[in-house]
Length: 137
Image 1 (cartoon, rainbow, N blue to C red):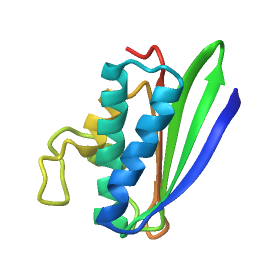
Image 2 (cartoon, helix red, strand yellow; image 1 turned 90 degrees about the horizontal axis):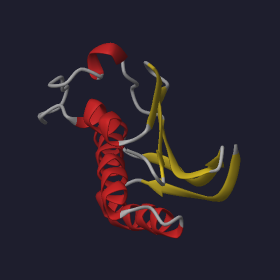
Image 3 (tube, rainbow, N blue to C red; image 1 turned 90 degrees about the vertical axis):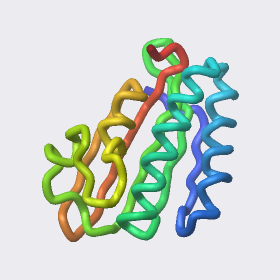
Image 4 (cartoon, rainbow, N blue to C red; image 1 turned 120 degrees about the vertical axis):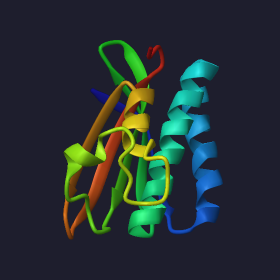
C-alpha cells in the first residue's frame, strides 16, 4: 500500500469540525470519488469526530489518500487520549449509547465505510481508522 497524500488536523472544539469535513471532501474529490461515496465518508467522519469531541475533548486526525491493488481511497485515523471504551463489543451494537444520542455512532459509521478498525484501552484513549475506496459500495 502507498500513501499518496497526507495531512494531520487537531480537533479541539466544535468550530474545528467544518474545516475538517471540508478537508475530507477535498481529499475525496481529488481522487474522483462519487458524490454518494463522498457523502458516506463525510457522514462517517462527522460521526467519529463528534464522538472524539464529546468523549475525549478532541484529538488528532490523520487524513491520507492511499493506493492499494490499483484502488485509490481515503483513510482517516482518529486518535484521542480520552477515557477509552471499556466494552468495544457493546459500543459496536446498534442502539447502545453512553451519551444521550441515538447510539448510531460507531456501528453507523462502520456501515458507511469499506474498512473500519477500532482500538481502545480504558484510561489511554481510542484510535479509529476508516477507509473508503473510490469505487466503494
